[in-house]
Image 1 (cartoon, rainbow, N blue to C red):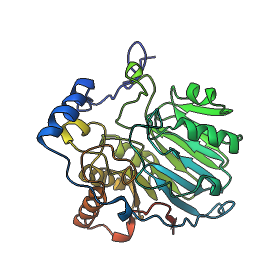
Image 2: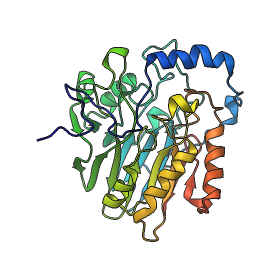
Image 3: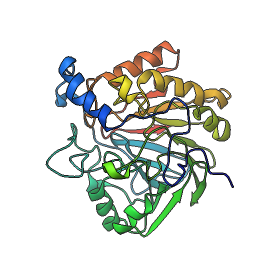
Image 4: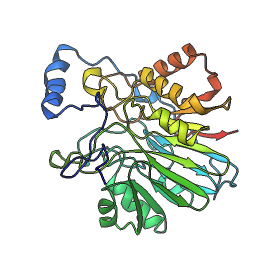
Length: 331
């Protein structure tokens, strides 16, 4: 059987598309040490400008017909769907870093206090970067919810098992699994992986499609714009909610191959809408407003996303720019 295009000969993974070449450490140094001196970052707003609200998810669980999303921050969401409580990319630590004294620090505390979480049935991961896979959070979840099932892309299970996770389901792109009445499909993303310089791209990165009997949620993961959004729509549409990243995109020459900006995000929405047949599609914005990772001001991504949404003629009610802790119910 031929090796899938996103599998690297000799082991590891790669983005299979011609324009998906990511930048290396030397380019990172050029950006951070040279270009930032020439083009200083534009000013950020005060962290206090980011509103945190009290979540209103349903305890202990929502009924199977109800779909709710609660934004914890960055790409961490609590999803209530098909009668289950699901966490995606859970990060409760103060920093997205291998150490506690340096690295990107939270601008806003987690929108849901850890001790207020409802019983967690499943955890879904997109890849192994520190702002998406947080070792202390994994350990806390394992202690509190030992029976939860974890879903990850290929290569991440060893990390989880070393921290006590009992049941891990690893999937390659387009492979499926089930939990209760919910079907989960691992889908392509354009990104990279690695928690240290020496193990880059040894594990896979992905998005996920969650399908119940009457609802479909797409979580795009951490990704640049790629050509498979239309394939996702064709295979799994119509889609009710798409959780798409909108931040961490400047400078574009460096970040464009790994992160969408709002303009790219709007193009992804257009692709995802190709199989809607007139059905409503809600987009929930992720990957912004929590960790300062790149050069654009922290409040720019939602402003630009709203501008793109209005210019497309889409219904304003179908763009969810959520506050930290906010719960939305899909109706």
